[in-house]
Amino acid sequence: NDVYGRIDAVEDKVKSYITITRDSAYEMAKDAEQSIIDNKTSLLTGIPVAVKDNMCTKGILTTCASKILYNFIPPYESTVTERLKEQGYILTGKTNLDEFAMGSSTENSGFHATRNPWDLDRVPGGSSGGSAAAVAADECIAALGSDTGGSIRQPAALCGVVGLKPTYGRVSRYGLVAFASSLDQIGPITKNITDAAIMLNAIAGHDPNDSTSAPIDVPDFVKVLGQEIKGLKIGIPKEYFIDGMDRDVEESVHSAIKKLESLGAIPVEVSMPHTSYAVAVYYILATSEASSNLARYDGVKYGFRADAKDLLEMYMNTRAHGFGSEVKRRIMLGTYALSAGYYDAYYKKGQQVRTLIKQDFDNAFKKVDALVTPTSPTPAFKIGEKATDPLQMYLSDIFTISVNLAGVPAISIPCGFTQDNLPIGLQIIGKYFDEGSILKIAYAYE
Ligand code: GLN
Image 1 (cartoon, protein in one colour):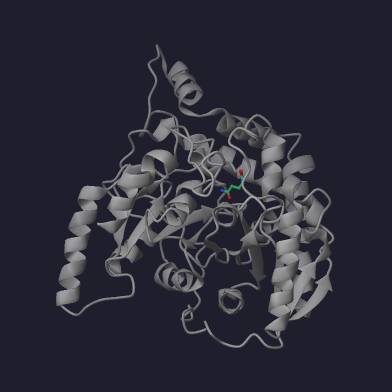
Image 2 (tube, protein in one colour; image 1 turned 180 degrees about the vertical axis):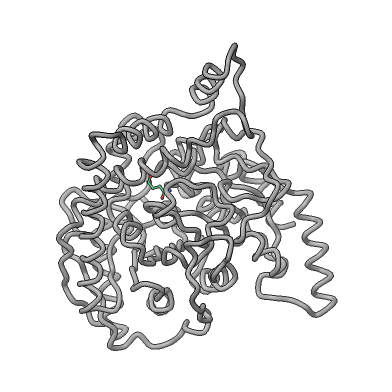
């Protein structure tokens, strides 16, 4: 009730949600009450959680913020929301995003833009901007986001909340609408580290429905919180402190590193020489995968269908009207990179450089236990500021993208404010399947 009171009070300003599921939430609340009476509770029983609108929820509209899915009601439930259901959570609603998770500001939504609760003239980041804004504005207790190149961590940083991208394969992608399948990963956006650990406990683990989910044990992430970080080596990659980044961001991250040092961690300078290729490699590989994944929206099976006189025209009109301009731009880029004659020069070369980026992480992790960097080079920017310049927008993820290319886990946590009172995020990157260490460091810092 408090959450819906809050939604009533602020939602028309912030616009975090695409669909608010008030009626089914009251039903879920009744079930939660019953499990309390039956003494069958979990840490998530009755907790109001918002879910990014690119995760399938059975019987509940799932649009990916795209006109092409404006009427899509999935006949099945994603694994993550199924697991949250088993724990007795309450779904507050489906949150806004950049269409098909393509963007860094939530301005690319096919329906409406979301605003940053700290300053309504600014973006919340993206693509999970609706989830991050909903958590920051108290329109839910926790949320799920998805992260292909930074879409959990960057909006978490810009909204002053916690965002965790797990290791690729840690969380099932079954029921997550695919953008770039080799990079996509679902994770929690929360108000604090403990909640992130509780949410990760609930959603992590092998799933036979996702062949890329890892068949390995999941530790109890809440248990590691509070453990000492004395003696842990934290790498500071020098390539992550670049010209042109915001002064306040740089200063806050440096003082965060000092604070970790005072808690007993040992900072070590490391070099990750292929970092500067990450954005280029990402936009070859992610668009290639997207062009293939999005081929299914043809107006035949589900979603929007345009009027036409024959089949070809139906395909063409459906996709021309159903997709927004950023999505079309990426389908064209990806189709080009994969086409015969260009494949070796673009896609194959991209894969090779991806391996070099992964090796940068392997080498760094021979020397250190975790890496610490800024999450985003700037705080929240003004609505419209980068909307007409895709390259500027792409650079928002310069510090988050390599993590997805390598597949390692990373968390963004609040580490201060700019002089204009905008939140700043600190990114902590871990070894494969070592979410425990980054949560432990984040908890010690918090
Ligand atoms: N901003 C990046 C992009 O536009 C990352 C998006 C994401 O992580 N889903 O592709």
